[in-house]
Image (cartoon, rainbow, N blue to C red; front, side):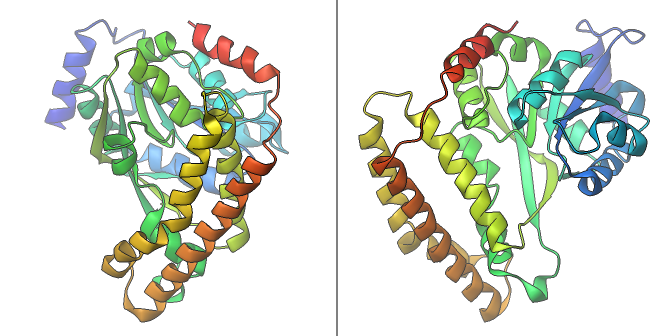
Length: 324
């Protein structure tokens, strides 16, 4: 605990009052996922970081049971209602009521390592904002589905996202509150994590990778769930790409790269230390070819029939950029 105590002393000496302010606010968007949310909150209660120095804010996004259902399972956390549908707007509502000097964004289906908050705060002392490591978990390694085998190798590669692509997913993101306010909130209907990080980077803020700030995310077991995820991501990426000049050319190149990617990405499957035996790796290879083929088909559909842009997106974009 000495390292954590020293860290808190440093943070508190830079304007965080012990009696009035919290160091970290953990912001969690939630939508109809109480079972996973219970496990997520339990992992936060087991943090080694001092409990009186962080708060948990759950932003309920029009779940069936609403705020009341969340409050029933989590009487010790702050629960707010987010009327506008979408994880981005829900995070904005949670951030708006947060009292911590730092914001830690987490997804409701993630399990935080007991050192997650401590390691995230340590890393943010070296950068302006940081994303942590996400480890994909499976139910039974001996009985992997195709979707699980694929995601065990390729899902949530935050190290690549951060160090190469210069963005962090919002399922494991630490941001000082003052930087969040300067950059503005998350947008809806687009790939909000990529778009927000691009805005932050454009303002000169430096993103870093916090490898020891670990959360665990379950792999999708069903093929339908994996398809649904990529349907959503493809649409969000398309809408974001359409805001740039010559987007069709860029999108066509991207589509070709996705279609051809199995020719190179079979190597990580074969070398993967997370898959054991011929059965698991053959399933991952099948999943790789199948999902990249499906993604290519969906991306070609975007070129043939681009999604209709919601006029309100322009308003939301301006609002996100102007939010202080």
